[in-house]
Image (cartoon, rainbow, N blue to C red; front, side, top):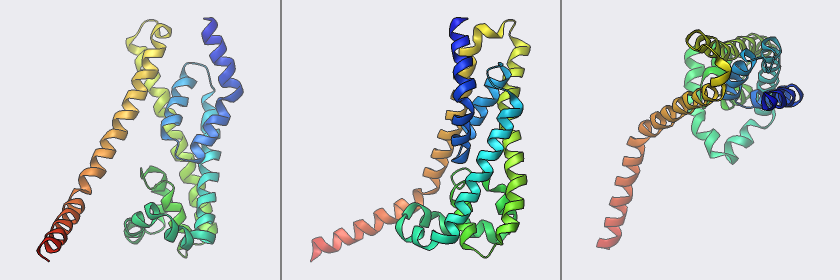
Length: 211
């Protein structure tokens, strides 16, 4: 009980700042965990949603204006952004301004899409209003996801306090599993490109051997 009280006091003091920084960046995992901690009473669910909303909104606004002012330079300097540029443009061509709304749900493009939208001719005011609504729905979906995870577990466990740490680990395991599936999917999609590169290198090496 003493440890739980210390954790509660620590989270009340620092939890919202950590959540703000996390949602300013990517933040799905930390927001899910914050939702679960809100269910357990360590945080307030309304404050979690509000903090995540502000963090996600300000984060995407920052990346949008970063793209508007330094986008071209970033494409030249950072190959990871340049590699995703074409894929992001295809999304923008297919969905138009709706990309600004779904950008928070596109894992791996969460930061890149606002930067690329900043490079385009999308009006800052249009992005601002879309971002306000998108950030709110994103904050609610993931915060309530973590909250409902705890709520669902309480329906099957008599004294959930005894299983609190195990549930937190289970939630982290689910998040890690989703992340690993995504990594594998990206690796599998890039396999044809790696195979082509390997064949090109083999042909080039064979030519060098002949000469």
